[in-house]
Length: 305
Ligand SMILES: *[C@@H]1O[C@H](CO)[C@@H](O)[C@H](O)[C@H]1NC(C)=O
Ligand SMILES: *[C@@H]1O[C@H](CO)[C@@H](O)[C@H](O)[C@H]1NC(C)=O
Image 1 (cartoon, helix red, strand yellow):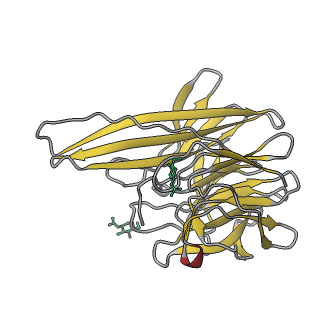
Image 2: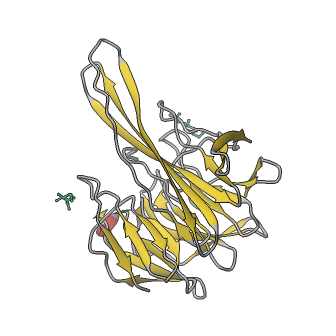
């Protein structure tokens, strides 16, 4: 599992989030074994006019410089969710590549972060979604860049407490989650860590806490984006693929909740991983940025369902 540019973006309700990232590097000489520099933290908060829901996404990128001058860049995106007046940021990782279990709430009315209950599992590269019952579902990720989680847990905003819920059928690192209009959460693909990239998808039923498999995607992928269209279908774009569809993907596919099946739709103009997709108020999807493997890209494109 390659952790460079690890990214865990989220889908909230019917939305995913455009993100902006940049990197700051501070060169250092000296004899210290390891210098870790926190680069840039960018928080993008969007107010989505049609729902009034606030969404935030947090990207942390830093470089480590060892005594031989070797530079390693690490990027992570903390999954961030917002309901009503608060944002919850969960997990992420510390400089040792061990996941965090801490979570924080952001109150946009005063611009202040406060700690809330710890998750049961340390993790990064997970998903976080606000369910229609107001709880936050967190799933997958890794605790330590070695094993991957199939564990999922729920945050109750009224108590600030995390409780375990049913395990997913597969361990998934950097999958995507989207909350369907029927209230179920769809989690797509990801890296299984032990057996490569997944093309499987599964549904979480909030009323039973149980995960069930649904149709397989056309491409195994992770570091992709997903969003729920105004017609209720889920659009998945880009990412890094496995097997025959390997490399950086420009492919896009649609999930139909009424049949549980995936169908290919037209390719994007650019292959991209770590992209974001957002459903605009006119129903058109805006896909932004990401990386093509050699560099971050600033191209954006529109998808008309
Ligand atoms: C990673 O975490 C898993 C699950 O907790 C654990 O079994 C494994 O020993 C850990 N590996 C390392 C290298 O820390
Ligand atoms: C990646 O994007 C950069 C910047 O747009 C471009 O120069 C480069 O050719 C692209 N690489 C690939 C493999 O598409």
